[in-house]
Length: 199
Image (tube, rainbow, N blue to C red; front, side, top):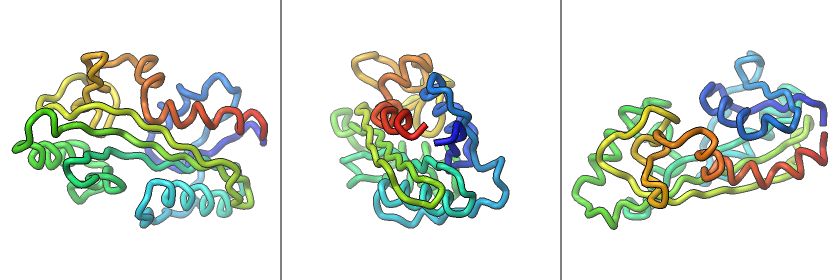
């Protein structure tokens, strides 16, 4: 694999996290802000894996590069799996973290603490320049949704996602600790051998 790996996202915060997690591999990581010709992939899959595969394949074919397609989100079993694949647009508008969190907290308000368990999930797919998938990996991290925002780090639901064994939210944890624990960190850890093999 050439030293360029394109992340099928225009989310700068997501790119920064992935750069921090994979930074020691010697890859040059780009996101789609550097590829204006890249299509807006419609994330209409009903699973994280379907969306990750679609983002990797369609983007790779369009720009002729190795592409990492990734889909991630929050799953709350007590809410029948919501927000799930709709995590980034739960309140209607893509990427409106404040509105998404407000909606989640409103739906959880009647529930006792023990029903607020949740997990983050990340599925990542690696496609070659012809769009063939070489690896699909998944990572999960369990926690609990709390009612008060804590911490300024991360993005999405991070300031409300408490990791019980650390007594801190993803918004409070240092980047190093978060990447070791997180769904994205755990998924990309599994992808490292394949990235090394193709480089």
